[in-house]
Length: 231
Length: 88
Image 1 (tube, rainbow over the protein chains, first blue to last red):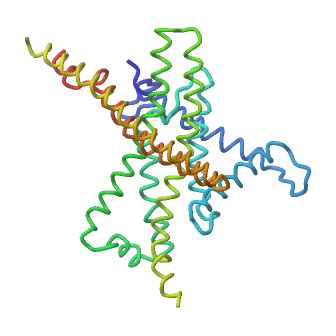
Image 2: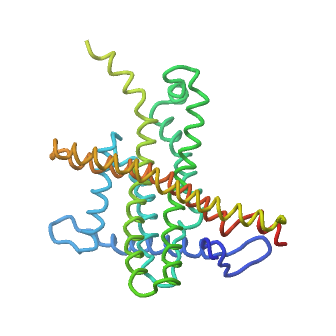
Image 3: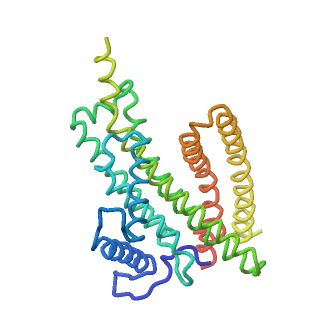
């Protein structure tokens, strides 16, 4: 049974394998990068603009508003990372309408890589915002006994991010495959539509959870400063 | 019953039970979450954006436990290391 896109190998040279996950990941990266480059070649700042530029602006301002609502003060600083997460996962699940395409996020390797990026980015932004001492002190909140539990919760929520995205993508593809052997007429199409919906929701969830984790890491000091400024 | 039969029976039954529990419990939790979200939407319709977003994030967190059960069932059926070891 074809569990993930890792099993389809295009080319192999000793240890290096070019499997479908890598090929589709690079294809997606190419489409996203070349597409945005082409659209932003002639940016116009007046009311008359191309509809592709309009689309990109809608996406960017939407993401910025969401990041701000989560509680991150300057959304522009976090927009590259969080926006890329959202766009990659969303594009990966949108392209399932193309026949012969398998979403690279349906492989545990890709989702683990994305979750590890989030895991590394949380102390990166936290230390950048608060400094090393304050950030490490935030692990001791509310008491130093909580230190192992805080570290453990960091690790498990990273794992949960990876498995959640992988499970949703893989189950979508597998349900369609199983239905094709049972009732091949209408139901696979309905399940593919459902897979599209869950793919977009999972893209949103992934980036919003990453934003919430980063906000928790960068906000702890302001929360403890506020009682001092009140009098 | 020899080893192969025991492993096959255990894997199949466990996969079925795992999926059974994995669909029941998160469905109950999600039902409660949506019910509370609907009642708070009825009380404060102008906060609907925040409520909807928090609802979706909460639903995804609850759903992830169901996904864990699904992944374990799939591993038991399709990528079972004990079965591959005993088949070889």
